[in-house]
Amino acid sequence: MNTRPEPRTFQVLSTRQVTPNMRRVTIGGPAMAGFPPAQDGGYLKLMLPGEADRPSVRTYTIRRQTADALDIDFALHGEAGSGGPAVAWSLSASAGDEITAGGPGPAKPLPDGAEWYFAVGDMTALPAISVNLEALPADAVGDVVIEVQTEADRQELDHPEGVTIHWVINPEPGHHPELLEEAVRAITWRPGRVYAWSATEFEVMRRLRTYLRAERGLGPDQLYISSYWKQGLEEDSHRVIKRADAEEARA
Image (cartoon, rainbow, N blue to C red; front, top):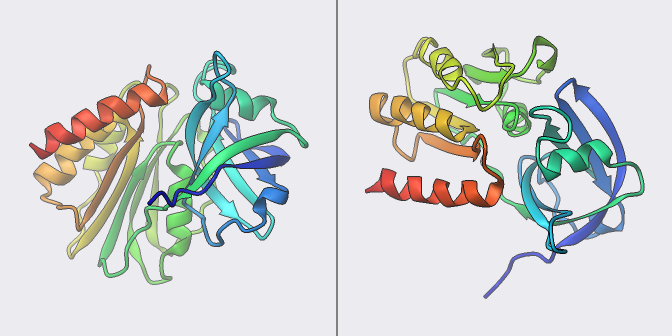
């Protein structure tokens, strides 16, 4: 039985630049009627203009949901216009425009019960990491490593006092995968049961998987790890290699 929600057509309510390389588009309108509540950290499948009248579908995190709107944050990789249809749309969107989207899909939250938390991501994962940090109990402890393009792309994040944020600057996202890997390996490993959460570019994911799964011995009950994108590939092609890689890793 197919229970997937029918796509909805939202209206663009506003846009703003959060940081130099992060743009927020707020959508809402009549499509919010009956939209499930409490979907922060979930995702939408945005149906963007494509070729031959076929939409280009791109997956984006719901940064924040209010009673009548959804905030969607777009990492602006590369020069304007070179970041694919989603980035192009975010830069051109204005109040009154429409966008059709499927979803929401489920969030990947940090579970209760860990003695400490370790989260890693680049700017594409910053919305999900922000949601996860906001949901942690006030006494949570841990470390978060986030790669951004410039110093000005750092954001003020709401997080427990015991969680330390470590920023890594990489002006060329998708290149220099060693930068994030080295920063992660440099974090002092805390005692106690950890839960690790990681979402990055594909090559970085493979490096971090070796460290967290193979070297640190974290199993599925202590580790969520995913690649949100791959340098040089659009989402459909990334999905293919991601599936093949997952099957190889399980073999």
